[in-house]
Image (cartoon, rainbow, N blue to C red; front, side, top):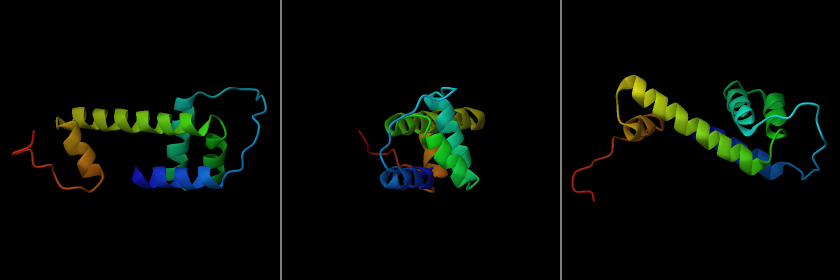
Amino acid sequence: MVPVLARLRNFLASRPVRSRAVTARQHNLFEAAATYVTASIEDDDDRLDEAAGWVDPDALVFGINQLACRAVTALARERNEPVEAVARELLGLPRADRTGSN
């Protein structure tokens, strides 16, 4: 997930500001997020650019965050594991040591 957000930041930083023309079909932020993440996984730069143009950059980041939260939650339920354990595993982090924490 981290590479996806890094690619998004790099893309948005290099993207020129442009006015939004009215398109024939409006896309919501969740469609944009799903398409953006899928395109990132598939290394489809054209689709990345297309999805990034559907919504404002802040909305796209919010949508990607929501997708990540929902995906980790669903995977944790499927595995019957704590959400934090699944999130840390997906990011390649060691399990959190809960002894002595507040």
